[in-house]
Length: 231
Image (cartoon, rainbow, N blue to C red; front, top):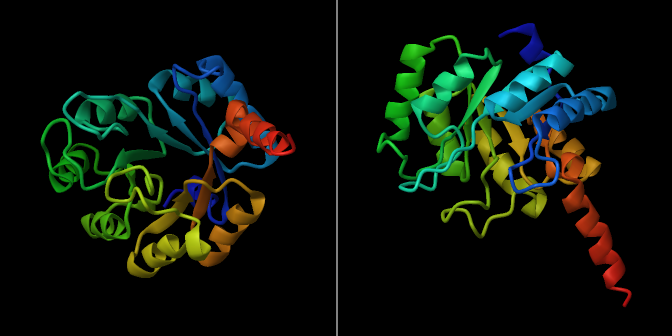
């Protein structure tokens, strides 16, 4: 394992993403956001799109988890959903590529196993991260051979819509850690420093925090909502 990846252990990864509908949507801004995250102590960056990742690389030399979010009409899978996106990410040399590893129909009708094996055949040295929504999906992704397992999609699929990653002191993460061999990266609703610290205490390799750091409109909403309760 590359020293850059080993240096991520027990540390914070910041997700620097802004979709087209969001105020901060701009590769330039994401590059500066990544620089600010590094200055604040981040050990890695998770980012979406070739353009954003290339700009982020100009600003920081941290390990990068790359994805491409792309919607296909025939599938709910949108995080690096096909080989087209994998090829695009591989071309810009990433430390880790993350893909949707849920048990849902993929745009190309490939099973996760088929998709994983195709990636491994074409890019045998590439580190891969499985974005999962359930403990069962995490266990299966681990058996396939993913290098990292993440809780990214807990609560965002039909199979997990009633689940909350932080519920019962991160019970879902505890189960994943107990049942997989790969490195577990916590992600999803980890919106306070205390929660981030807790998941590392539980045994997660790293923790990804996104909106609580890099989406000011969501941060503002929390403050505004709290003040409205006074009215």
